Image (cartoon, rainbow, N blue to C red):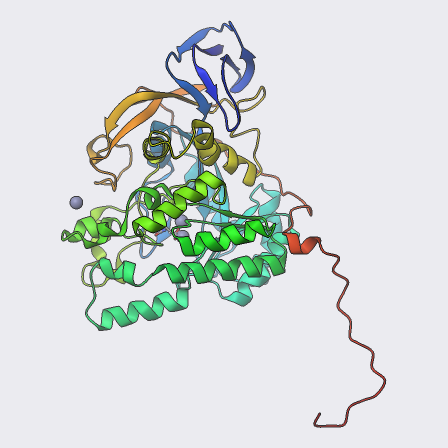
Length: 483
Ligand code: URP
Ligand code: ZN
Ligand code: ZN
Ligand code: ZN
């Protein structure tokens, strides 16, 4: 059985041209003119793009006393509906739990996925067992390790642990990821706010000013440089963090920044909505920022100082959010966005002229595949690549609403937003999963994508210098005591 996509314009991260795409056995078999296949998909008026890759999701994750509400079933169904054909989720050991044990938990859950997936491994504590198991994790195709510099008393790792883990990741040829917020300062500010009677969701934003993110991002970059490991900063939300990333890249360090679609399009005024539920539903870390920070993120995507756009999809129902009534620190942190990332970025990025269609493909798919070392299997339209494709109709419109979404939660942070630019078809390894908004995908179709380590060339700039082994200086005399 072959499928051909006809009459469309192919848009990749670097090229735009008219051609048909022939698919066989889940892969792209040919690209050219006048191709024919058993089944035809009409792409008249549409762009044929690599399917989106969301590098940052939390599906059915135990967090803050509950589980995130979208699992691999509803989460990946939502992804496909919005043109995303692969997610990279975080396998999260609870502190003290082995990495391989956590991996088994994630394997038990991910069998329900509608689209392909991979994992990052979270390092939530440090010890000999973690050190040893990291090697096996890499052997199983998971080469990116996430560290939380926030969530003190829960997931946070201290600087000694961060440095030890970064060195280990570097030696294994992997990349380090960080949630960069100064967890000590956040804990201190939170306690003070609560003591002063600031208990509402807006206090969540007060407790995590841009400085806590800027400081942690700078620290992570310096620690990563000393450890000789490439660094990927998740959910870059503000200029303070972006500035550190920009500077590091200018210095030749392998550092990447990942803004979220939420931070690009929603601002801090959401937390001052008098409706408690409205504000609490938008509580996430880092919080939404003001317009100046948003402009910085857009500029970063344009100039290339920021590399990818993710969702950090970690959705909680209103009922789950309400565990934080009377104490903002108990509101589960996280928002959804998997289904809306591509249409929202197209609407606010491409339709406004901020991004070209090629840049859109780069930041939603190709750059991610390259950074995470799965290009050109993913993120490409090349003969031999997986036929994870989206036939994108730039004229199709809808209004985002919880009543029509795939996600399991009862609201949508983008509720009421009009988007223009939607999938006509989404294909996962050649199988049509979505047709003009109608989802017809198969639970369990998704496969795990193993990723190779990059080896020792995977180093930050400073590590290229000849580092001779440190040795003590030979001196002629022994100084007198007390000197
Ligand atoms: O608030 C957020 N971002 N929740 C998900 C977990 C994380 O920190 O990424
Ligand atoms: Zn985070
Ligand atoms: Zn509302
Ligand atoms: Zn996250």
